[in-house]
Length: 115
Length: 110
Image (tube, rainbow over all chains, first blue to last red; front, top):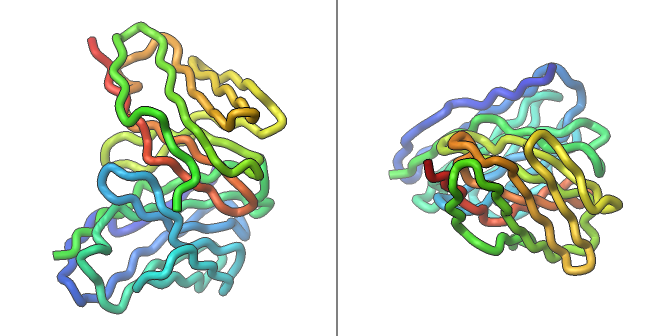
């Protein structure tokens, strides 16, 4: 069966420090991968998605970036964190067919607090 | 911005009663809809989905209804249990993108 791992689960970072959140998927090949952010009491905002290695689409302008160095690895990064980057970050995947009828499955999330 | 919204941010329901959670969406081109349940501090958990060529789908204790005429989606939970307390999100999918509403917090009263 497929599983998704996301880490770290929680972190507290000072303003201006770098960020790296990692996500890996097991049990599938060539998945579509996603990064979402959820502010407290809000819905999920799509940040990035990737349909293949080296293929990254950004949904919103921000000081975050994403990379996909391997087929089943998706990394969310920042060179300098802002206070507004605080939130709950979720990695997700869907099957490579990726179109209607295939749901998206989420990891357990990473809580980021920028102080 | 978000294209999917929920009618009510909170819902309080007596244990054993049926719950109905509503959602309005705006993108008529969306062809797939999903309900998720999110417990505190965890990632969203898939509940049930429905394609746009359907108007009803049933799962275990849950039913999703889709009314494309008025762009309305609902989730019905039968015999609500304390473990159903969570935030519920509807989402619409178009191609690779899944867009979420703000969520409805369901509280089950004993």
